[in-house]
Length: 133
Image (cartoon, rainbow, N blue to C red; front, side, top):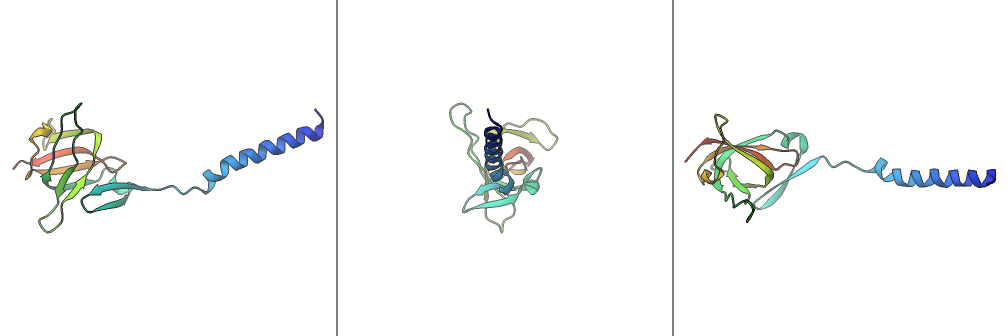
């Protein structure tokens, strides 16, 4: 190969590498997670939803039958003057009582006071039963 041809190949390779890297350099990182609830979709910064805790009273929840039907979202109302909010459950949700012991999700009924923990995606990954109805 001639020197001119090698130089041309080198320039083409450098150009292609630059073209492949350019979108990464100008991409904006979305630092939000989506929490869905009745009526609208809220976007919250990931830092807030990671490890965040929400306390409220369950207004609707159906844990489902594991291989047959997935669980429904858990609907929680934080105070009587606010609207209930629907939270999506993560793939692995731990249900515990206030002492940290395991709690059967089928016992979570409307009127139960819960504390919700969230993962990085804004989905519920921990349900602490604070007070049963």
